[in-house]
Image (cartoon, rainbow, N blue to C red; front, side, top):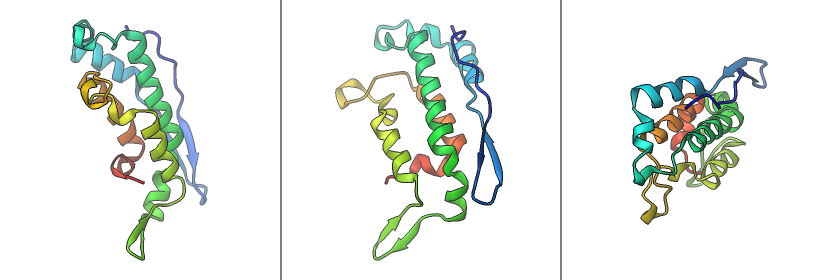
Length: 147
């Protein structure tokens, strides 16, 4: 397990002031921890988590890393410098946050570990934590924003 992950390179981001930031999803480290610390192969062998095979797990880690690097990380500095704005009884987020949040929702990222009977994907919490790590590392406040 874990040998199919696509090698990643740091994604270099630059804000309007030319300040460069980098973000690289820790895919290799996440897969190592899942496989060798959390015992993910044994967990995935249980019928309840049978869809969490190596191929699916790699796809989820890579997809979450791409979302984190491509949508969430570029907004990190903007969120710090512009922030949410309160006006006429509502909160407006800086440009890009709405799109990033909808990519998260439409991709089903918030339902990974929720039970099937409640509309979730029923995947192991350990995998959901790895996804949360990528998203939180890319832009922690985005993890809690509902646009």
